[in-house]
View 1 (cartoon, chains in turn red, brown):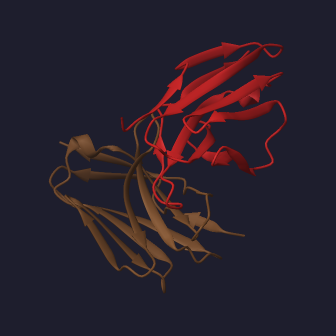
View 2 (cartoon, chains in turn red, yellow; view 1 turned 90 degrees about the vertical axis):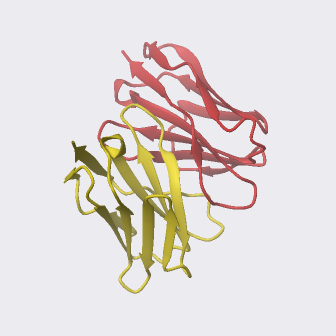
View 3 (cartoon, each protein chain N blue to C red; view 1 turned 120 degrees about the horizontal axis):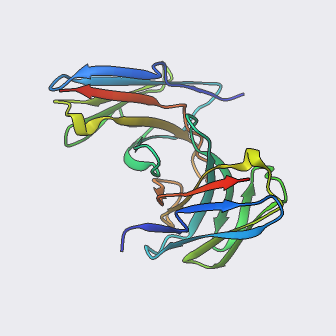
Length: 113
Length: 112
């Protein structure tokens, strides 16, 4: 299995809702990432988990809460989001030998109404 | 602060020609430079990685160069095809760092 999967593909949520994005990989990768991408912009790093521990939080607002239940799964819990949080949310993973190539999932298109 | 510039937002090229994309960086000494392809609404796909001690790397029709003196990487696609049309992102990265910062990308259109 050489892919990163993300669910759901699309999500529409109100500002008072709580929802979660899910990411899964079975490549034995031990680093996993969340990125946010707005239209016509490059992906921007949000969080990095290394060996299931949060190692980087790029000053992301607390309405985004990451979780890494095990080495294959990564969640992003969403609560009280703002319309400007609407974006493509990408999950990625990379091999355990260090920072080399990253493998991205197809993304979740999030719309906050 | 670190700056990454891909100096063409868009590049149009005739099918069969060689496309050359440029990535320049400043205030930075990356150990690696990576290139990704992204299609609309999809996640980026890793293409090539070149290390600071490598001058050139090839994979099929793709070639990447890395000039640490000029602080520049060039990405070439030879015998370009319409299927190569996509946005190409460069990403310098430091040794031992999980942080990957992307350039703004170059949208390549290969015209039949």
